[in-house]
Image (cartoon, rainbow, N blue to C red):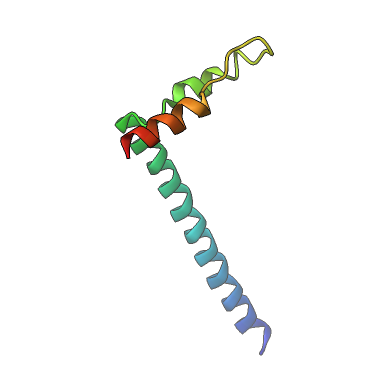
Length: 74
């Protein structure tokens, strides 16, 4: 292969790699938006964690309560 062919392959590889990263990022962002709108998780609590991150602050979520609620729903 000559250098021009390698550069062409490299260009296509970069394009598809950037496209895949773009699709993955926006699908993740959409899933966060959807979960926030459905009320499954409140992401405002996580953003407030930046301002209130002390050892005395209460946990954001109680894992035991969540697992008990999921078992009751089944």
